[in-house]
Length: 527
Image (tube, rainbow, N blue to C red; front, side, top):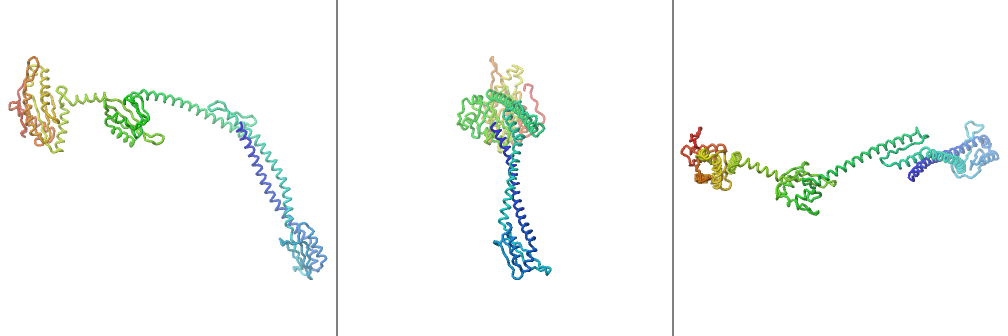
């Protein structure tokens, strides 16, 4: 209420002060104008007095009549407006009266009665300027007092009008507006005598603004409640998520983490740690930082599978900035150890033969292609050996497929035992195997290994129930680059060498001779 009345008084006083200021300016202007007018009136009075005494003065100047001249001069100086007067004429006439200050003087030529246009003398008059100015100020002061009184009356009238018609109603509106709470349905009202005025429009505008404020407050309350629910849900998701969630700075210092991360790490992270937890959790921590830097540069999240001491994690890293522009990183980790294990099982199923455990046909072809490319780049030799068991069909027919599978597994075990590191053993299908040797000693190693493989294949194989099986092997050998510079050429030529052994009677090896045979040789049915 005190603030409202202060505004009310200030507004009314301001209106009165403005009216008083304008009135005083008018008074000052009137005062100056009155001074100028009074001085002008004095000047005109002096000139009129000189005009009245012109004829007697001219007569005295023409005749040289000193008493008449003295009377004229005395008449002039008897006026309050004349300070000094002098009349000069013929016969040495020079009559003066008053005290001269050598100020502004008026000169009047006195005509001669006898000669037209000839001056008989001069009438010189010096007005009493200080007296005239004093009189003018006195007259202006009286007029100014009258105007000042009128100005005070006008200012008081304006003050009362402003107070009654503007400031008091505004003070009332301000006081009622101050009591209305934000979001309240209460509105301002106006007295009947003020309806139709600008205050009614102002009241309507204020009420419209209050309606808008109420709507905004209601929306804000709804948004605030919605935000509270979202924060509650997010906190629940964050705290109970099975995925490890964390926020760290550029040094790896944790700023925020959920229980799933602490469970994954196996301990609480101290507030002053600067990223020591990263190498503790990950076997290759630099890969996490590489993805973080890529996310910072691209502005997009980056994903990476990272290996830990106990399994695998899938990490999603997203760079962001806080309110101060500091670089931060959001990270999500979830365990993919089971998925990796499943992928490894599937990979082994695709890459390895399920019966013998050696490389499958598809994996063997891919590895052979890769070894040929490596041999070409290093200018080393490479040997491809194709091995086919002799009389294997007879075992299947005589003892059954289980016995045949046992023979294949035992032969594969024996062959694998003969190989050293980086030498490949592949089951191409049925009873056919492929061996790939690479390096500078591939050629002599292939010849020596062929004899060992023949001995291993020819050794008896126990089938159980005191039964034994005997098989032999036919081996064909092709060398890179002598017998081909592609994987398919080497396999094909090694096959030709193997069929050459079949033709000669089996259980031997042969190096491709370079002679092409488009039709495979005929072999016995028990092969």
